[in-house]
Image (cartoon, rainbow, N blue to C red):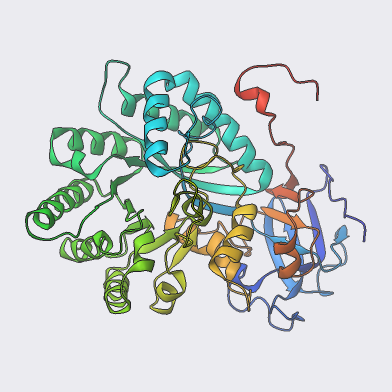
Length: 454
């Protein structure tokens, strides 16, 4: 089959005929009468006018008066959503390496790199590179955590990072939607700096965040201290009407129970439906009864979970000269069975915490399917990189193909979900507002200002 050519810059209205769209990307009722394949994906004619979807009809029923482009059953996806990233850390691995690839080495490398390099110009350059990668791959929205540490002799890191974030968010508006989360150790909310950070986040339209990594069971004074810190965080969030996104239990300790503590704190503070928890690795290692009780409380609290399969497989259970024994990811099937929404996200990219990646959510999806066993059947899997993370971010039309929404699409040279997962699809076509984007994946030389012969 030949790849369709849909580059018509002067065409205001057109039809993409015979587009295969996974049903999870569609709203109820639009597929009535359409022929479905073995994955349950309907074959549709997609009508685009003035940059928006104006019709989704069974194949063969699109308007005949408009120019038409036959996709011959190839897949049409919305642009995807990365609900957990670290753009401020990205693309630092070449200058500050993590020598052993483990978590402690990642934290040390990141601290060294941040103190040495992270001024406004450096963060701006790396964010621009990351966003160009994401846009070229078909990512439409990113929630990024921003290291928001107190002022040091080098710089006021929180003020510097958030200023660049606001600048880049505005500059990329309409291309890639950005949300920011203030990332500090949870202990930062125990003093006046927590209030200052909450003000910066509120002024930037962001979310409050924090990292919880207990190494022993939470009980007695440790549990009391954690509850106090969470209550202070929720209090600061409530005063400013901010949602919360936390890093949770990113360790292989089966007694680590901070997710359970967070679920209780969420209900105690009346914050149901406004909390996201990322990682939750140790939940997979807990005894079945303990894990089930925690999952039930997470469901009651309306907490959304984000799993980071590529990064957690890279970091978890990493020991020198020993093959890892477990996958390091959250038990997402059990969470979903309890009614807990979960998303797959990219997390780190070419930094101390993960040496690889390219801000490509299609690649992350393909890896996630295989790591998390989200196949057999595959029908629901794409929802975890489209409508579910979009809902977590509060983005109504993103991650879906629906009438009235912006005509943002990824066209893939694949006819089935199996073919989507089987190949990387470097030849995908990305549309924004009905037009093929011109953004290319940037060359690595752009990070350092070098000339490239390519």
